[in-house]
Length: 371
Image (cartoon, rainbow, N blue to C red; front, side, top):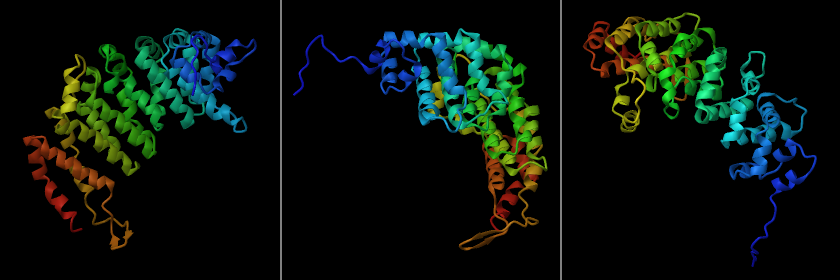
């Protein structure tokens, strides 16, 4: 049996450390209960952590790589705990960060080209920035707006998933980030952020970069601020997508992911999604991207070239299987072309249907069963 005596309680290990005369931040980070105490808003702890010197040290754990021969807790534990302290969303700690230009510069120094970009620290960086977007939206957006190079640096690193997630939220293409600042995001269109993203299809050979670039663009088609909605559905932007897709030197992943963006622009199923419509009905901002006749016509201009890629007569690739050899295998790019054709058929565009008939698209698709 345990007896509880009113007025008597054991001091927390964190308070015990704070009682010492010469303690360091590392002593607190090494204590298991520090996150619990942050969430409980331990006044002495918060007053210590809100100091600029301590915030700077916390940031350095997140943005600076450590030597391989460093202690494990310096490599793994301290960066993790530092990140967790920020995402506890203690207002005075976040305020110290966003109101100090030097600290913000330190945080975003992680994006510099000459900086190592390990996925572990990139994840912590992403969590902290997204936390600032959620809790300190205006100061964060004002900082990024005054440092437009941050956007291009984020685009250069979209092959890292956590960086891609930051960029999605930054451009307002995420339902949880849609807020009053969406009306003032014309500057993102002015710096041509969508063009930067789509041009990664041409400048990178990485399938991860192509997939993440497409995911961002697809997100824009669903939750786009007005300026970006107009841009991504324009025939010129669609033409830019297909230009990269048909470049001879580009890997097939460019074609696959470019078509994913086009399908996201066309797909009518998202217009009748109950959860999506419920979310939309609560918004006073934003534009639902719908494929205009001009957008569809822009896609139809490239339809003939797409159908040529369904021709397998000259392909030499062989894929051995347990039931025989496939020569050639169908491949993801041909499957994606067929999916694109099926979506074109579903949008109710008479012009699209007539073009598909004129080009014999259905015949090409049926022939894939026998070739």
